[in-house]
Figure (cartoon, rainbow, N blue to C red):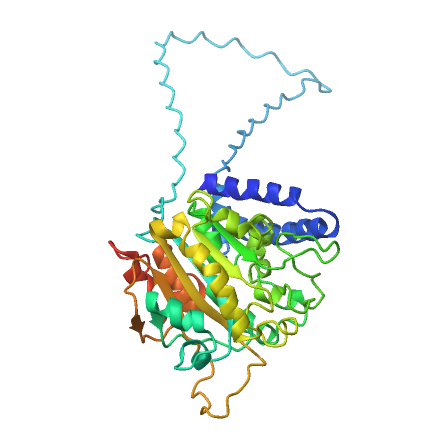
Length: 438
């Protein structure tokens, strides 16, 4: 476990080395405040610390040994003074004592041996089941019928991809906005008023360092991960950059058709900011195609987020280009074949096409009745380990995405994913022994 902590510290150093100027200052400031709070809480043996605090606390406690106190010296005897006004008479000499046989010296007491330090039980190392590479694509939904209905607006998804996979017909969002769903899908966080309002300022939605995520778990278990963000650039330079997010007191600075931090949940977790994981693994989209070429360069978990146009938000694409659901479908038609052709997917992969928000400007077809539940959006699983053309009517939500992925990699559920009512498709797909938490 200490090796895992050292690995995370090295990641922080490497992440900090890639930052400059104001962003480096923000990383250092947040690290000092948040990480110091975790260490202080762990050192005081607080019972209300999160998993990351307990982890750091155990690491620190292993280095502490009590220092023995030096014994106090006995006071020297006080010799009375012989000076007085009158000299006292000399006493008669005392008779010599009879010789007494000396008693044997007592044997020295054995030195007390230090008690062995208590050991923390070692948890078994998580192991993945038959699926070892998960690809999650998160889109905006124009409605279940637009994606999977009889006359869909996404013909590649419904006509080409759907027959290859397992359709989750009862997958439902927690809210129409993106952040409540994505923060739940990677961290088990419940929606808040701030996340439902797309975070008036960045700090309104930032989460404490002890709030762990799926990718924290993956990193500690020595699995790899990356988040691929289309059009993510440094707003100051316009150049591709890692883990881009606004100032703490600033609102999201969206570019029409471009990158939006509201589509990128990872910078909102201080557990990823403070130890450098976000700076290392939350990367521009351009790296995806290169990483797909080899199994060794393909992360165990890949989170793929298109820009505001290709994610499927109406009014974000150039005039004359596909828009809304059609733009999202065109993105899938371009990139899903590359994922399905990759060595990692062919070996042991799972593709999840999920919807993480509603398209706020989706056109309404007056010929169709309004949906009974607008948050019902559906999702699709594609893998050699699922039955082509299958249908799963179990009630799933973004917590289920988290729980299912944890099950696939043998991880214990965190946050709301640990609730007993949360259903998981991962336990079945895992194969072999039961997943953690079942």
